[in-house]
Length: 501
Ligand code: BES
Ligand code: ZN
Ligand code: ZN
Image (cartoon, rainbow, N blue to C red):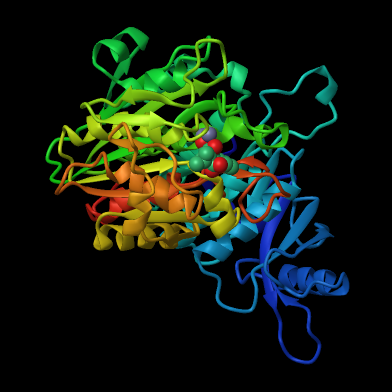
């Protein structure tokens, strides 16, 4: 992963391959750009003249490369546009990420910060880590000409300033978590069956004060986790349930996060068409987000009790697979008539939600690539939030908005629940096909005890980017919901007191 440091070396003296500077529209008749005040006046004028001559306008994320001669020690200076309006953390993250992505193949990069404050350091460091990210683990001998991610980034700012160091440590914890989640999602499904996902969870928290419990297939059968077992029974790779427990001294609030961990979704006997299956390694993105968020929250030492739940199975159509028409018993005793084996996420989540609620946390939030209907309704960049509590739904949205993860509110209408009525069991796993994101939420809500606050986030759209990279979002796994969870955990404890360890 890309390392980010603070340096007290003057920008013009930095020994780096490329120096990144932010530029903004100069305004006035001559147009062009203005450079950062942190550069010496003469160097800044040369940069502005060169970038302007090359057509730079200072628009958001616009990139202009100029020779470093006369400006800095670095052989190349990359001017990145910050836009007309005063840059905010989101525009800073996007601009820096766009610059870092374009520099893949370079080793050392410097970033000029003018008057660095904690918010700026955090946004720029995080943008750098997220933008530099490339999944390289599947490259073979034929990939020698593909560029490596930038290795090291230096930000100009006093490394002895306690507040700047804390901000950088926060960015590192969050950036590492998002990149970890992306790596898990990008890992080919053959390399990440449920047991391997459980191992990855163990490894993610190995150096942290987090307890790990793992239920194997025998324990799942013995304790009646009928949803997880039913979904996993058509696969040669047995299912798992993982519990991650972070319980810091003095914590007053408690949060349970539950993530869908379908390591591959073929649809089961209700088989998906080939095109729809191509991206279904991403069906454990909720699990990845939960594991990554618990690790980051523990690493940051946030004073909140957090429990991560990861139900995991591979949804395959083997000869032992569950059949449309089967009735299964979820943990706790509710029966489900399974009419479509491709609506499997809700079955494993039901088990985990009932189990999570046994511990009566203040809040349960589940996250899942749950429905194609979410993509139809909200597109592929916005997640849907549903809840049994309006204040909680708003608080989740606020956290998402704060960190720049697009999410929006959806209802759980009463009629959604009645479409799930089964003639023979307590409930069936599909509705009438209309409002599929909402009936999935109505299904999950059935498994939440009265009085338990719960929210559900459907990330079927934003979890996996099939298109070109944009901002700090790469192609493939995106790490969706990780930052919202960290922000949410911080928002209910008060982030002010947090310090780097
Ligand atoms: N994993 C899929 C949902 C999905 C679709 C995620 C596209 C990411 C991108 C889920 O298990 C599924 O197949 N849902 C079905 C439910 C239906 C059968 C009620 C769907 O949405 O078609
Ligand atoms: Zn499915
Ligand atoms: Zn699925």
